Length: 392
Image (cartoon, rainbow, N blue to C red):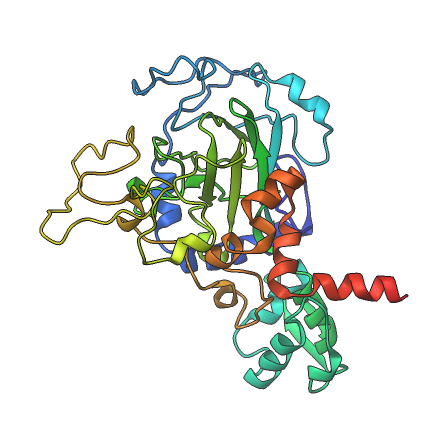
């Protein structure tokens, strides 16, 4: 994995990642800027020894079921140090006063060697199209490449020349899994605390919720969960209480498909399962024939302006079903826009959440689902690889 080094580390990657980061922020738009201005407000104070102090109190929490210091909306964040960074074992959980039961890492996987070849004019449109066609299923089909052995020379941000063949560029692209939570699907029990580790920059966790301007994809009564922008080497803790399905995204990187799903309990109390029902327009009913909150729409003669407070305790804003008050998960992946047109064929936010790999029952059965499985399911290459292994 290609990551930006944590504080105190040195790497040649520091020479190129800032350039890539600017491209990412431009493509992602203003969400990263807004997030940095305070998407979350509860932050653990750290002394010189890295010990947590008392978090700030936003005055909204009166839920005795929440662990001390964990806000039901903003959780608990720290700039570091995070004892569970990198390849640490689960014993690292014991280092926390509020001990997590699970860990989710936040990653960027953009190969360093690929970036010099994403600059304008390095690859012509025909070569880019052939490379994209060659890596659609996550493997490199050299028959799709016009000239696999053609050598291409580009310049790094440091001014050094680097040369790769078209096939080598395609291989680097095929190995790209981009911006992601790891795992992308996680099953937890009510009351479990999850540790979110920022392995790379510009990451946060936010629930799909109308108070974030998004479609509602969390259980009834759950508020607009949001972490701050978590510094590299830092972490965020959140306690999941209400049973159901929680779909969440990284605000700066949602346009590039960075989403995940948490299933609390068996997921049956979810407002919307976040899967196939996400795009349904017809009204569905519960067993008793009563309309469910997931699909209820406002009547034609009813004013649908939300209240100023946007009460989240009942899971619905006045006059509107929550999922009708904001944008659904993004249906296109904009990764090619920061890779000079090169497209590794990773799923969009909508495609990832709609994938079989992130079906809530699959997550419950497996316990966790890797982002690699989501990408493989999207590319359609997972079964083919298994068949090849069996035939061998």
